Amino acid sequence: MQFTDTLKGAAIGEDLLRLVFGLRGKHVSIGAGYEVQKKMIIFPAIDLKDGLCVRLMQGDPERVTVYGRDPVAVARRWQEEGARWLHVVDLDGAFSQTPKNRDVIASMVNAVTIPVQVGGGIRRSAAIEDYLGLGVERVILGTAALRDPQLLEEACRQFPHRVALGIDARDGQVAIEGWKETTGTDAVSLLRSFAHLELAAVIYTDIHRDGMQSGVNVQATRILLEATDFPVIASGGVATLEDVEALLPLIPLGLLGVITGRAIYNGTLVLGEALALVREHLAKERVSPE
Image (cartoon, rainbow, N blue to C red; front, side):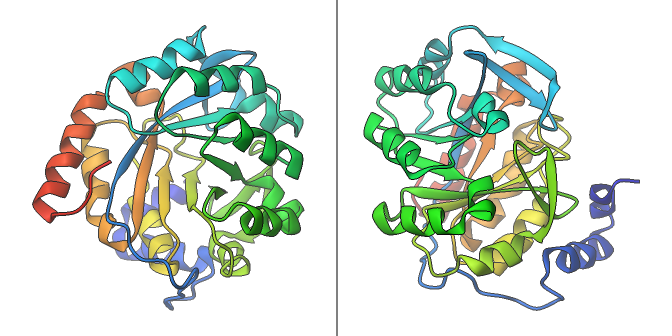
């Protein structure tokens, strides 16, 4: 049985998650000073490999599905369907440790008017400055945060609230290098070390669920939210409208949004319906839709 399967056993699963995340049953406030923004952004994901729009299953480059040969057209499509943000990952960059789809990303940014966040292979300050100079609104650092914490600190100092921390977890442990290497660091411990930074957000991905459409890991997301004041974006496992609905109660805890990929490409989740659901919920709660 995989660790994530234990999540179905509510109390037991939550206790195990808290142990793995390093909480030991206690509430830990990380990123103090952030106010709950009370909005919910649906981020269509555009993953780039060899210049194509693809999706991987559990981050495995051998289990790839091509969903578009023109990423620029895909970016325009999601904007036309109502997206307010785009989430772009340079998979080639993530695996090779340096940006590989820079020109494609530049074309995408120029083709849309909505903000774009980009991750994958960003290991140097020059790459951060280059992407932001292209018009990218937010860069995502994952592996670099563990390998070179000083880079993350300097980036946040130079570009406050324009850098997100990507935490990709396998069995509760942070994975790096395009998810090929699992570390012995838990998510909360990692967040604790960066509590003083002016991060834009924390993007939490459950690798076991990514690309599998097996349902979002609500419990793990809730526990992370309870441990930090940083805004959190959930990722991995979104399959249907019910998964988006299951996340709505987490908005008051600081959930900023959710990333969806395979579901909107396969049609099991219709972007317009997800956006409408969020708008309706936020209108009832009198908070701000995105």
